[in-house]
Length: 119
Image (cartoon, rainbow, N blue to C red; front, side):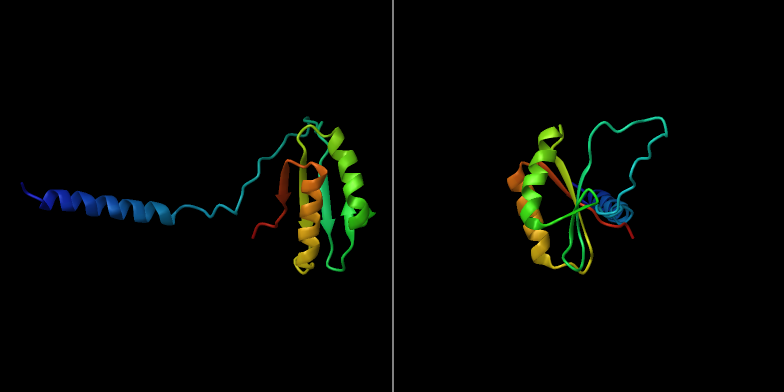
């Protein structure tokens, strides 16, 4: 059996997969869908914002990490999706992020999203 045509096919497949994999975009860069002006959002979006100085905001309302759990439980009880987005300053303390993440899980959030800025 002649192996040279088989080796040629293998090399062509290898080159094809190498080239096609370099054109894939990284998974972190997203193109978000746009909405028309006529659609309404029925679901309340829950956003926790953490600043560099340690300030905590729940939907643009100042709060503390201590009071965050009770307020978050109240909002999640009204939510159907049980989804929370955590936004944080790039220079915020890592411990504040972990505390907020732990509080959201204890409060009953099913989906926790971390907001980031696309580059």
